[in-house]
Length: 267
Image 1 (cartoon, rainbow, N blue to C red):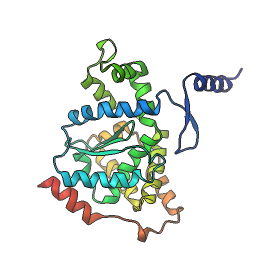
Image 2 (image 1 turned 90 degrees about the horizontal axis):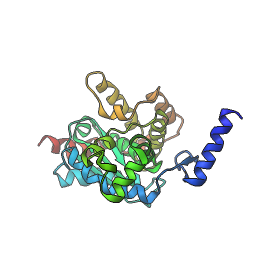
Image 3 (image 1 turned 30 degrees about the vertical axis):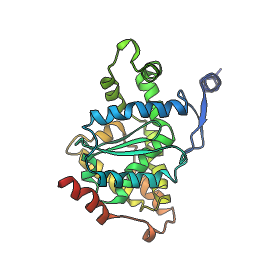
């Protein structure tokens, strides 16, 4: 029996005994070790821990409402618009954004300071929304942290045999690494989401170029946990050029972003 056939049989058997679901981004059936309700419970439980670990929420209601409004605009056109999403800006100075399962999405002050337009903000939030919808975060947590440890922490409120404290587990969640395949899907799926939400897709290209340039002079936490696929800007630009978009009708929002985010971060 060939290795490919063995792998197929193993995958089918795993789906029967554990569970499979259709990834709405790719249309492919994938092994899912956690249920959707467990995704939501993990996000609900660890969102406060993540906020605490990264300095807490930025104390500016207008800024937070703006970030959330952009995120909700994307969430409404996502494949899982029925989920409840939370978009939160945190005080941490790192260049980072990440998602917890079940619709909890965070962006740091350091990242916000480097963005220049609402379209660029939409690009980051759309990218992370795809990770949530595709359930990449839940699968990464299952494989990199350990399913039994994760479920024990969620169901009992304690980590298995006290191996990890809540803070240690939170650090592992923040440091999760996605595959390059997941990243490419989040890039292209996020680009589709932001266009559907009314944003200029070049905001995605500009953001990825900014992150790559920053990586030359400092550590970019976003690129540590989101390893960039090859030719990232090339395939994003190609998708835009072949997408037949009416760019003149798609939002950039430079002035609104400056007034609502950048000016408030410096005051």
